[in-house]
Image (cartoon, rainbow, N blue to C red; front, side, top):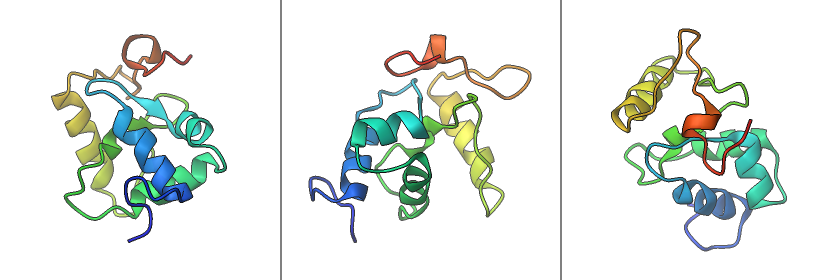
Length: 109
């Protein structure tokens, strides 16, 4: 599978960045793209969507720039992402958004 740890590909760089996000914190697709370099936020989304079920990559820690969970084409992935984040202590407001000031990795507004 392309994008394995340390392979130097764009997907590999994206996965390396996502693996660095600590439990209980979140990053945006754009933030991950900027750190990984040579890709766009959309490419980060495609990369994370291509992960095998049961992957050890903490994909749930990547959310959109508004602090929300981006809808998944399958429907139930968004609910799973929220549950995984809540299990890590991440809290959502009434609009379903996460405070980057409180839970953001490298604090992003």
